[in-house]
Image 1 (cartoon, rainbow, N blue to C red):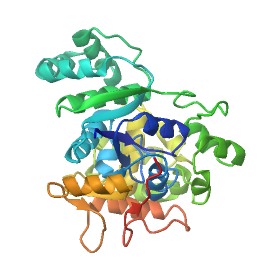
Image 2 (cartoon, one colour):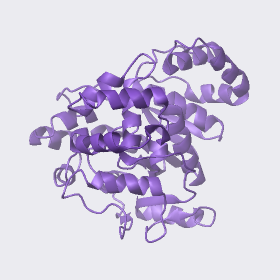
Image 3 (cartoon, rainbow, N blue to C red):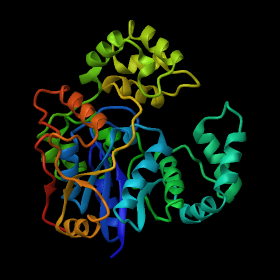
Length: 366
């Protein structure tokens, strides 16, 4: 049987994600962000709820991405996630994209010309953004042109590089429905942005989200729940440059801006410059919130849930992979576990995220 990997946030899980799982071939392993997102924000609903929704809609295994893989720019995010999935024996990676181009051919070219490509990237002008450099590089080496300004496609290109070096195939799947950040309520497939924005519209949520009752039964969070905690961290931290990826310039910009800002969005606006994008600033604020420092990634793979088929597959890989199914006195990953403890502070009704929690077992319904 083909084993297909999927890298996801499911923030929250919606009909577009269900469609992706339906289109993915064979046994489906999802590497999912934990309680903080790639763009630098808290998860809308906790990782266990999102894992359960995925398992009820076609996933066979859901494993958690460590915090220092999740909250990263596209290339590091993709490389860390594909590394975990390849240990679990995937043959290919399925992903949603706005542009259906020949990603497998691009991967072949990247695998054979990796050094030349890196040298070319290093030679490009510093004023270009990374996505602009990336687009220029791909067009130069593959002759394939594309618009390059859509988030899923930018991730698709990062997945292409990560899969190329590990000889993992690619299964691009055309995204349906509204645009990535569209707030539209029209159509059966709404964006995650629209669902977060219109979360109080019960009819809309039920139309857009499979197993909507799961989503509606748990606390729903945003940066607003953490602003005071973030402010406290910034004001009391003895040296912000000790935090992951925070340099002197950013530390002083953040410390000056926090005195006037009344929300995270306002703080991001004050700190952002041409050199420091909003996404980068949000990620840095997330690192500050959880006091993240550079550390090696965990060896073990954290299991959140499985179907019967997924459980069978786990038996076949268990000898070569350290599967962490329960976190007790011995930590899995201190940074991720601290991030989870801080995430829990966002709402009094949030359940314990790690200690004593065991993987969800879901009977296959597909």
